Image 1: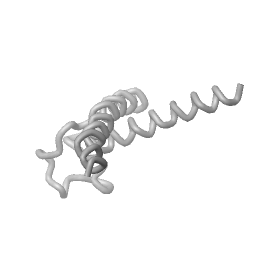
Image 2 (image 1 turned 30 degrees about the vertical axis):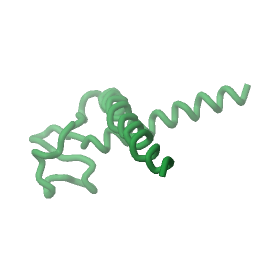
Image 3 (image 1 turned 120 degrees about the horizontal axis):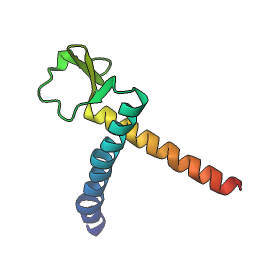
Image 4 (image 1 turned 135 degrees about the horizontal axis):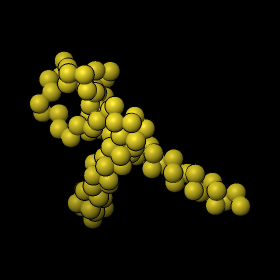
Length: 95
């Protein structure tokens, strides 16, 4: 009982905060920098019909502009953060 309470009311909101907020914003910055502004991040998907999403729902187009979905931006941010942490740990333990 207490473990499920901790998992549901403490760990899950903390994970959602990290994944959806921090990773999303890190991903938006990384996408904008690496694509030189060619790709943009979209915060909401409610205005985009499912048939307009392309390549497994990772992005969509509005005119000529390509927008990544919020989950894709969060995934990019999470992967980049993981790579940075791995690089720091590798440099720390190598020396």
